Amino acid sequence: MIQMRTCLGVVDNSGAKKVSCIKVPTGFKRRYAFIGDIILVSVKQLRTKRKDKSKVKKGEMHKALIIRTKKETRLRTGDSFSFVENSVILLNKQYKTLGTRIFGGMSQIFRKTKFLKICSLSFGLIR
Image (tube, rainbow, N blue to C red):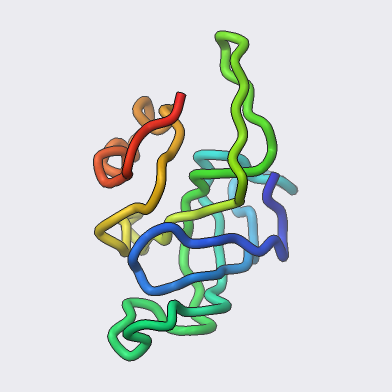
């Protein structure tokens, strides 16, 4: 469950390391976001290498797709899974990824959404 002011890790090579959630924009008075939701984030910390060549700057606002949460997610089959950290991927205004690589695995839920390209960029898919 991601809500306002939650600190998240960035798992792509866009240049950001830590971001903070500003808004969960979908829905009327919606408070929490889960895996597969798009949120608005602010960049808090950059990666140490190549800060001058980074695609993002500190303090900028971007849209982000949540790919991992600590909160347990249940599938229709009855299985459940959770991750160790809360993680996102940064997106541009056209909902395309800013980075070209995704570090670590992600859920198979994304195979049935419009973010199928993100599955091919990731390291592997987890049940």
